[in-house]
Length: 284
Ligand SMILES: [Zn+2]
Image 1 (cartoon, rainbow, N blue to C red):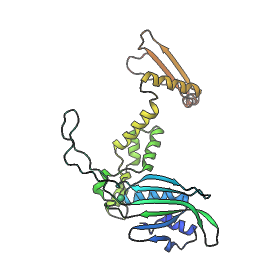
Image 2 (image 1 turned 120 degrees about the vertical axis):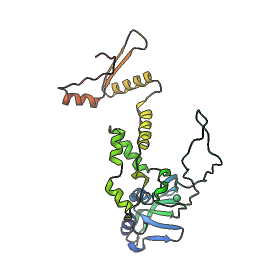
Image 3 (image 1 turned 60 degrees about the vertical axis):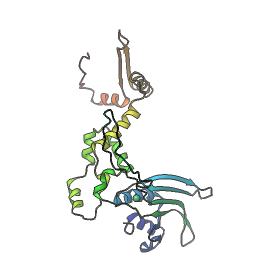
Image 4 (image 1 turned 90 degrees about the vertical axis):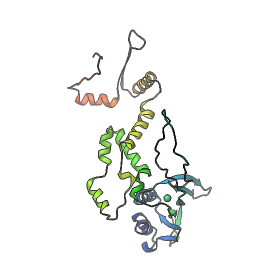
C-alpha cells in the first residue's frame, strides 16, 4: 500500500530520487519518505481510505528558525486506552440496560508525523519539502467489514455532506449521491483489491447529524425563536434583502417576512409567475 502509492512515487520523482528507493527508512515499525508539501493531505486522505482508518490531528509544532519549519502530528483513531466495561450501562427514563456500540480505542501504536522543511537537492539547491515519519503498525485489522460500524467517517466525506446540504440537498438526496453504487459493491465483494471504507456507507444518521449541526449553529441565531428571527432580519437588511415585520393585537402575534438578495434576484429573473404557499390558518 505504501510502496505503490502514487503520491509517494511522484514526490520521489519531484525530488529527483529513484522511485524504487523513495523511502528514507523502512523497517518493521517505521516508514519514512518524502512528499511534495501540497501532496501531504491527498496522501493522508488516500492512505486512510485504503486502510479504512482515520488519523486524528494531535498538534502543530512550529520551529523557531529562518526556514519556518513545522511539524504536524497525528495518531490513529484507535489510539488511546481501550475502555473495558465491567457491566452493561443503565440509563434513560426506564433505567433499562441499553446496548452500546463497542468503542474504537484499542491502544493502537500507529502515529504519523509530517515535518515541513526545505529539502537539499543533489545539485545543492533547496526546495520546499515534507518528510513523513509513519509508524505504520496498527494493532487492529484494516479494512475488515466486521468493524465498519465502529469506524469513523473521514473529514473529507463530512465536508462533502456539509457542502451538499448547504447547497440545499435533502438528506435523502445526499444519501442517494453518496451511497456506494452496485458496481463498486460487487467489485469489492469479489475482492479485486479495493478496500471497504466507512465512507462507502453513508447512513441516514450520518447525514442527519451534520444537518442538525448546520441547522442549530447556522440557522438558529438565538435559542429564542423570535430573537433568532430578529437577527435574521438584521442580517437581511444589511445584505440589502427585503424584510417585513408587523405586530398583531396579541403579543404572540408577530409576523416576519424576508427575502434574501439572491431570492430577490430570482424573482426578477423568473418573476412572471408567483406561487404562494401557506400553512393552515394563515391568510395571505
Ligand atoms: Zn490504528
